Length: 110
Image 1 (cartoon, one colour):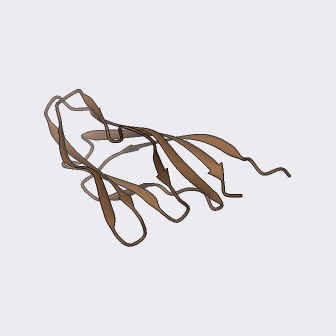
Image 2: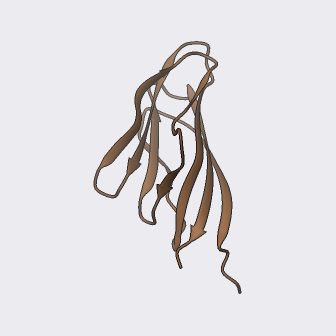
């Protein structure tokens, strides 16, 4: 069977106050985050944090970022490469106030 060189994926999640792993590339692939949108689904402002995890430490992309009610923000302003074994994590300031959508291109590590 032929190896798929590139595949597009969409990941969605409802964020909680616990930091959660949203995306880790499939074994043998590198992920490229094309878009990461965080949406506040309530009528009141709330906060969100999104981080890159390299296996040892977290690097914040947005940290405690306040998003007005019924509004959204881009957690990335460009593409973000997630190598195999690394991951993207996120959490909200209050449970179920934030939804996140990731658009990802996975490319085979030749």
